[in-house]
Image (cartoon, rainbow, N blue to C red; front, side, top):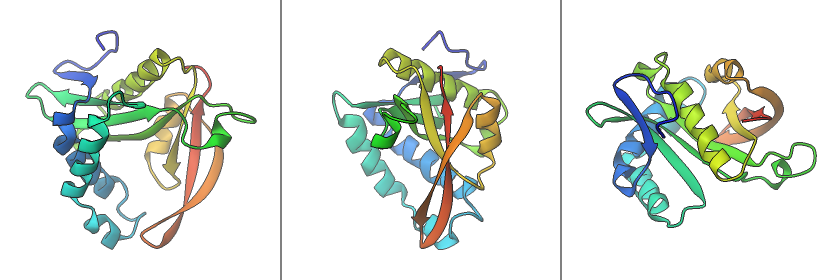
Length: 182
């Protein structure tokens, strides 16, 4: 991934099964940081590092994986963010009106690491990973109240669809943001 510009002192690499525990910590902590006030507090507090790590261990052990996960880590090897990508999970986004070939399933970066160019590095990792799989466009879903919507628009994304999902007993709007040429 040396063709992707990463801030000095950081690296971006393909995740390995040994990273499951660190990815789980970023996943849970980022949910708690990002979705406080959007998602019910009791749901956020019920998130489990152990359950999330077990899930990531299973997914990262899947060979060959139908998707990819990249992590951003500091000079000491601490994982502070990740992006998980692959083919669209929803048929509607594979053909017809939208025809997106790639999806960012999840992208999370610890709040203390934001504003340093690491989110851009993760997005570029997603682009690179999807292009290497023959995908030339991508989309992701983001909760309506999530402040990262502005970041995705700044990165060239265009909002194009909306749906409702339920998290912790609360109905929430989710916005699809797409990039036509990656």
